[in-house]
Image (cartoon, rainbow, N blue to C red; front, side):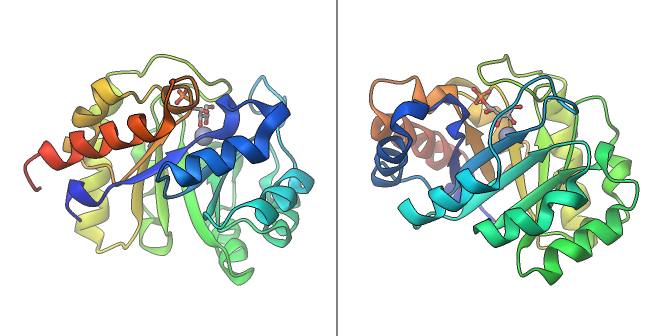
Amino acid sequence: MSPATIHIAPSILSADFAHLADEIASVEAAGADLLHVDVMDGHFVPNLTIGPPIVESLRKVTALPLDVHLMVTNPDTCIPDFAQAGANYLTVHTETCPHLHRTIQCIKELGVKAGVTLNPSTSLSALEEVVADVDLVLIMSVNPGFGGQAFIPACLDKIRRARQLIDRTGSHALLEVDGGIKVENAGDVLKAGADVLVAGSAIFRSPNYADTIAAFRTVARELQPR
Ligand code: DX5
Ligand code: ZN
């Protein structure tokens, strides 16, 4: 895939939750490709956010695919509820899944696209054995838990290696990167091989969502094809 065909996934963690439907309508109109939904349990990560009832409500107000990032200790217990609520992608952390192969199969059997992700300190080797089975590989470029953190530059090399792993194994997985992504560093992330950019604060704390999403696409267009 050429970087010109990038996908932009606004993370609603940085949206105004008192006006969530309006915020989602705004990013949809602004050209978002996916809606990134951060689920946090106050245990695996030090924050509490969204559960299946909210995903079910989101499903009713947007046609965008719901890209649900599960930052929870026992994802197996809540995967059926999020599938039922209308998630299109369910992404689990390798750190929370002792039986990762089974968890991925379970997500797929529910008719949902399966994603796997890694904390910045987790080696890429944690997903090597399953990469051919997944629809999405998510590289965390911050320690998960909060929006608005700074991108960890050392993650760029991991993104490059994830790209190589996906290409080498013939996996059809999209390569998504999440955390600290701004228009200013998007070029580096795309050059490293990302297909999907998650952006929370960069979009929802900008004055004009359409201008910001357009700026991401301009960065992608100006890169040489991989
Ligand atoms: C962090 C979340 C991210 C977060 C990104 O734990 O997984 O999706 O919302 O926010 P920004 O883009 O502000 O770093
Ligand atoms: Zn996320």
